Length: 298
Ligand code: NAI
Image: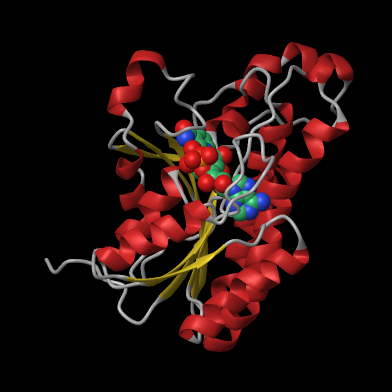
């Protein structure tokens, strides 16, 4: 089988000055994509900023024979998002791929969670994805082609102690991805998400002995595949860690139906309600209604 390539495609990768974003950028550029390497260059908690990381990754790509341009705007404002997309248009004339990867952490248990810990995290991860994707989306609709990849996390999908702010943002990105998939379908725009686990500056103190096995470069193949022209899926979420790729999905149990439902019925049938055998994976709200209609018509 031929190798996968991205010739003629322009990819914006946010937060690509280091960690996972840098690996995504190196892989896509090595396969022919023209890459906008965006990074604000701040610390893990989002304070500060430096032009260095974005330029370093862009130079690394060029030194390897690839094509890249650095961009140091923040994703977390509408103006920043517009400017990042404009960088792609000015340098390469189009945008085909957006990988929303920029991220920060401000962990605290919920009873200590304050607005200054919540708002910047939502701004970068969740609003940042809106602000960068929307101006790119308008171009993608016009050209009837686009690939969007959002970076979620098992912290949001499964819940991780001390990360209410981050988890809410990361699960918010799943809803964002699902709606983009629905709205993009008719324009050949696909939107998916990954939930990575990798050794980066964000996680190096948390992963313990597993860290050696969790090379961030092992996340990039699924990221790149979901951004490829041949990507067969949209609206899906993939776990990626140390070379193992798997799919997360939202399931709905068969449940319990009683048109005369009472409070006590819920108590008495709670095991049936929770029973996972025979669950379905509805593709959209219509899938849930279809399950309901079976009961209504019986
Ligand atoms: P990282 O800290 O190396 O990379 C994040 C990058 O985003 C940094 O280079 C940072 O400067 C940049 N950034 C932060 N705020 C920005 C802003 N406002 N505008 C532009 N760039 C900004 O960490 P890592 O691990 O590579 O994280 C990448 C993404 O993967 C993040 O969204 C993170 O939440 C997510 N993730 C990572 C996991 C891991 O195990 N490393 C686990 C789950 C999710």
